[in-house]
Amino acid sequence: MPDDRRGPLVVGALTVATGAVLFLAAGDVLPVPDKTFGAPRWLAALLGLGVFFSGSYIVSLVLPTPWTRRLLGAAALLTFVTMGALLLTWHALAAGGPLVLSRDAPRIIVGAFFWIFALLLDAIAVVAWVVALRVLLHRPSP
Image 1 (cartoon, rainbow, N blue to C red):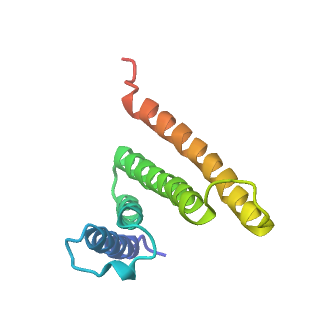
Image 2 (image 1 turned 30 degrees about the horizontal axis):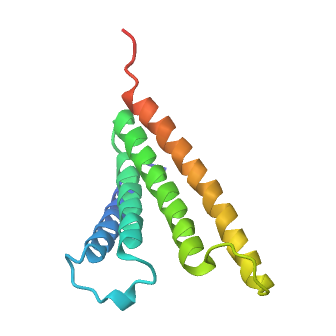
């Protein structure tokens, strides 16, 4: 089987274009009504950035640049982890509501579920950012 690099290049380019369109639509550069988004625009913009970085990573797989591959892979991972943490935190604040004692037990259970996983994913995102920044700022010794 010959080494064909066109497949990842085409898929990566289409993924980059999809992420760019989603990001531009969320930023209201491309006019899209607010009711098409099921979440705040900033959350859709983070999703667009994640898709964009993922497509860039796919394109970098066919390029002979390992540093770019690591950087774009880390950017895609950090974007998705941050987006997931913000999504769960937003959902815990908006839909789950504050944890208050009431007679509505299912609401308390659902709220606790979202708060527990939101705090867990927030902690994972903070650790991922600290590790990524340490790796990026670390200078190799001569």
